[in-house]
Image (cartoon, rainbow, N blue to C red; front, side):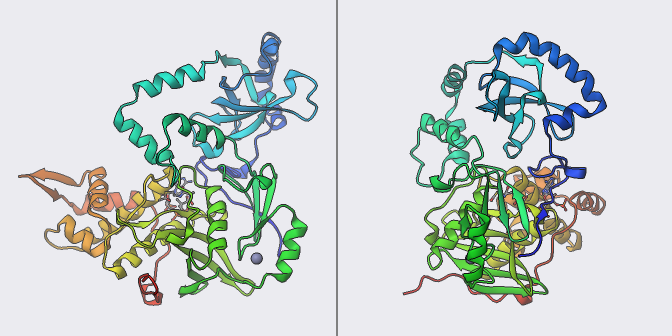
Length: 444
Ligand code: ACO
Ligand code: ZN
């Protein structure tokens, strides 16, 4: 199976694993041992005398916590558990949410990472929740539904939604092993209960079956005869391949992929009913097989013209252009279907960045080359990007004016160049001549 490598992490401090130069994990000892930390530690220990009576801290407490960048950041305590020694209230560990960061950075920390000087009075969460829910407008409620409800749970009321959030608030699986990589997970995923609280799950990188122990995986690898995802290879260019997997024909694979993907997707719908979906799995191929890099799923029939349901690049492969490749691929499929498409909402923070980058690059490159006027409809026909997404992208770049009841695109070449530069690198290119695919047709 080759040697194990730690996963690389995006460098903006918003990723789960590693996080930034050196990728040092944040632990109590590390935080206390740096020069600046010493003074802080003395103050904290003076404070801990007065706070000792309040230990262990209550769930809901807000306090400053030393993160992996060695700086203090505000956190909210989400959960607590007794440490291994568990003899005193100071032995508790706390699961914290960094209020400035995405939930994927939530983690267990030790008491000495917390600056007890900064502890804020605990707000009664139930009272606070009640007040917010009373003040919620219909629109806000719908927004919450859109972002939080899993499929089949549309009828959930606000209380059940909170229960759902409560249930998913702490990551259940901390790490996975997949192929050559050990990967820190980002979010809760609803694995069957017998897998909960396994510190690490071991995935077969080909059939995506998962196991609790390394020895089980080793035994499995001896008898697993897959060397690539099941389904049809619909694209191959150099070492990159794309497989189309029908969720109806490969149910277990589809479900395993959903469990795996949910570890890195927060508010995305989890489809147990994988029959209704096609999965497009991107692989890097070598003489050992085709190794999954990422995927996107697509409804076989979408009434809302969604051409992509969920998209994921596995963390070790992120920021290399695969995300934009997958997005471009989804639009190439839409072009072959003769339809316009849009990704299912809500988009995550990283999803929005990737889509905005893709839309900007594609649209501005056309505008740069095009002589004369061009309408949003024409842009949509050329790119298969839905008109609303074109409008919002161009509006966000301030390239749209509203004149005589019409949207007009104002494309000064210098302005276009400036935006293109800011839009970052293009992704890996999709070579359409290598795509062998026909749109899905129900059989029988
Ligand atoms: N920090 C800052 N910008 C980022 C980051 C990051 N961590 N990750 C991506 N971006 C932006 C950048 O603009 C980047 O372009 P650049 O590298 O040229 O600057 C662009 O997004 C996309 O970069 P890619 O390398 O093409 O994309 P990647 O392979 O990293 O995949 C993806 C992007 C799929 C969103 C990935 O981050 C991921 O899997 N995230 C977890 C799951 C997720 O959030 N999926 C989207 C949910 S929405 C939906 O499914 C419809
Ligand atoms: Zn297998």
